[in-house]
Image 1 (cartoon, rainbow, N blue to C red):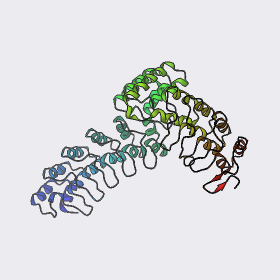
Image 2: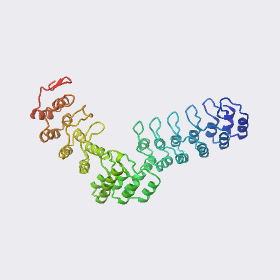
Image 3: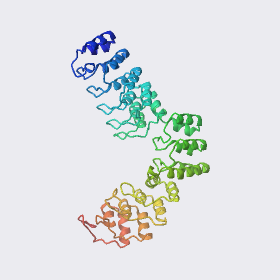
Image 4: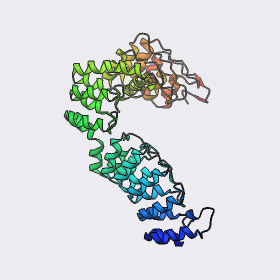
Length: 434
């Protein structure tokens, strides 16, 4: 190890000053000379907590941006070892708070992984991004949750870190904690949800004032607003809305907070949320078609109450999602005959010939019902909607082709009774009888 590095490691400030005065080091800037790991003296002083050495190096122009072989800056090193005084000095001298190393980790990632809650607070106060992702798609909250560092988790959540962000392995911070059986972290992440369910408005208020995300999701996709609405805590519902809670977010089953309130006959809360939904749509036109997404999810899950509620609001029930799949397709795919009937009874009528790239490339709702053996939906489409049993999708296949290919015998019989052509040719080179 070079002499200056050794002096910085030991905190021998007289030796440090003497060596800096001589300046007998290789490289364009002697104070930033490197060892075999590409560490500068500043890296070493940060690692060993030698504050005086750090101050001396900085006075001599040491670079706060220097990187070692892992692309860690002195701030990364100070954060790893919990050197708060040094981290503050580095930031005061212009250290980049969001600089990433070779793994994409910022200093806040390092603090999260190593359980340095005081450092995490300092970094965030100086502008660190709480939702920054490393090369695995993990945020500082992912790493703190995985390592069971409850204090860091609290700091991150207090500053609005999201527990719903998924890494490239599709894991959220909450998933990480549950997978590691870190029960304290799980309880901490869900603290706002718990307070909303219990009606603890003082805790809810304190957490929201501290900066907790009012739209945080639990494992079922419920936000705190879902919990408060379900348990009939009107004061908490209003408080959450004041702090920016989104009333249009559906949970995993397609239920919005208002759906939960209506299901429990909490009429006052349902009315409050209805007004909030209208206000939210007016204020956030760029927020995306939450209600349309909710309708797709509700049809997929078979939640007829949610579907009915959304249809009453005038939601576009013919709107396809990114896979060109409409709510009717989802209802047919999952054999929810009551929802199929509800959708087909709407005025103006549902577009039953919408394209759907998820089931079969460019298929129809009739083809979807035939593929899945949904006799009631197929009957409804054929008899009530006047759908031809011989209509083809854009690949040229008839409904009978699809039913035969998937061995849906009751559907085949139904189609034959309705006049399906048994000798219809499929351009993809197979006949019904093949």
